[in-house]
Image (cartoon, rainbow, N blue to C red; front, side, top):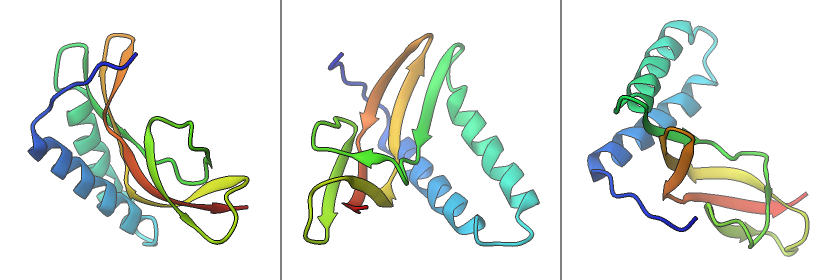
Length: 114
């Protein structure tokens, strides 16, 4: 399914910021209250419409191959075999409505050999 969905750029910018905050919170010892706020923001975007909205996915640690259509990757290191996502610059953002998920924006990642 190669359909594209247009969403306001401000939504993508806000989701990118929520993703960055979520990554930074992982390093904090007392992150519960901030984590709740992040969850609420994500839930707000997930429910932008009656039966759908925007979600993002962090592909850190997932296998990468050039057949993946949801990622744009820079390859680190000398080998291009057995690649794994080691850094996520921008998460994958999807539009979900009913049972359909469409890619709004590909994730931008760094991948390197295991």
